[in-house]
Length: 249
Image 1 (tube, rainbow, N blue to C red):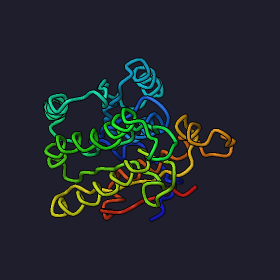
Image 2 (cartoon, rainbow, N blue to C red):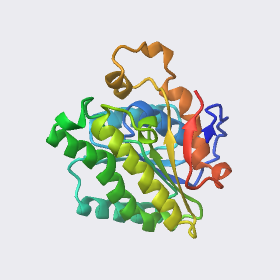
Image 3 (cartoon, rainbow, N blue to C red):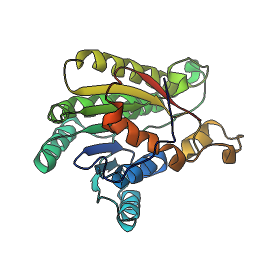
């Protein structure tokens, strides 16, 4: 299903909603953080680099948007205890969670499965699959406190149509697609909706690593695509559940 990026953000439309964004410190995560805060959401910015989290925090505040919350956490090294603490912190601070956006991820490397480095495989799977699983599992109780909860997994075309040499990244996105679909079935009688989103071409460092010969100027900026995230966290997208969504380029 195609999702338009030309969504007109209305100031205050997400007022009272609490949304956690992983990888919120740069790229698409930074852009969606700014637009979610612009729409009035309380954004919990999760990322491993406190410095860049603070830079994005300053951008949000300087723009006069809703003040976000910084939550430094390294998803590669995070343990179940870290996620339990996050759950406690969210419930203590807000009493609920309305949106969980799994944006953080790493590309790994481009090479045949036969030659793939084992340590890099484990690292990619830890960040791209295991961390979203543990984070979601721990935050479902907080999402259940919401009258309209959302889980959104950032995916990729290589997680829907297998492509040679995409290695751990491609496999991780197939896993995310399966995790999202399973959750949508298990949670269908709750107020939580679960979907995946392929953002398509986007002008980020990860895209440059994957396509080094590509002219980045031909790709949409994260800022031009981020309004769609506000739509997907708003009541207007409430009917969507178990969908494989793709942004219109």
